[in-house]
Amino acid sequence: MTYRISRSQDPKGIVFGLSGEMDREHAERLKDLLAEEAHRSILLDLKEVTLVARDAVQFLASVEARGIQIVNCPDYVRSWIAAEKVVRSQK
Image (cartoon, rainbow, N blue to C red; front, top):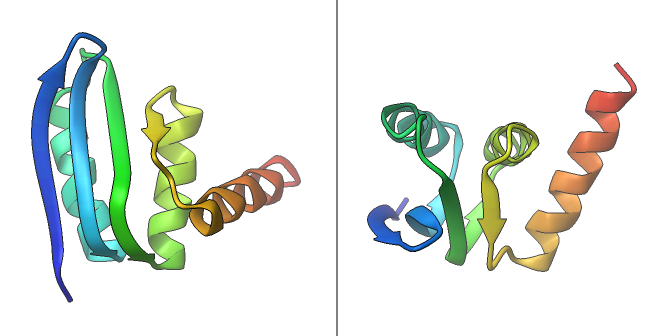
């Protein structure tokens, strides 16, 4: 499975550009990188993401709930994130 994370900075904060197929292992790696930047504004750019596993969707929903912005999110991923938020609110 191919997956890449690039880090850059723009006026809005730190941008992590994600590309390829995202699964639980990749979400864990991203989690570590986000922890290193916890004191800064963070954006996740999903423009080049091709496939996202359910574990990764759950992770994305959790980071978005903490205030991390997700941009260029594929529609199917956005709908999964919204569904995950509904499930979490029912618990």
